[in-house]
Image (cartoon, rainbow, N blue to C red):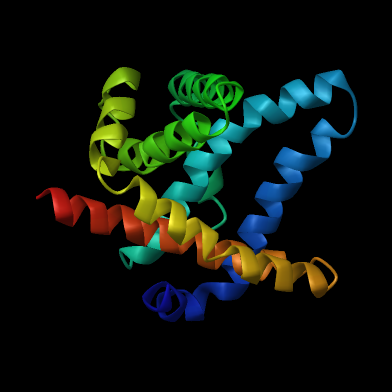
Length: 186
């Protein structure tokens, strides 16, 4: 977390804007009507891939910009199908007593980062690689997510604006953790 915060330091303002834009694009349409909910669902996957591109660029000292969000739309059908599969698998897991849903979500959470670095992989290969990469690390990843809860609560106390300061830190930490997992598997 400390390493990610230091790496994010020169990028924090733009990264916060990227997270605000992501939140608006996914959140606003869902509040409109049923079609808005569908639009949000269809936008969420490509935008999540765009977020992964953006934060991997920061992590790897490559140029990162708001346009990275749009890059998530390039493999449109593939990324929408991945988002649908992850969502359905997680919901089924949650219905089966919550814990399986958390395990499934954690196991598939690295799929977008894998897709950024290996766009040639099929949907199935991307999901399997995420599961393989997180094998033995799901509890550690879960604890990493839990460590951000107090920061999000503090962000809420700052009229909600603080969330968009914590969000980039959380996202870069996940990208950093992805690199850590790759090193552990090498």
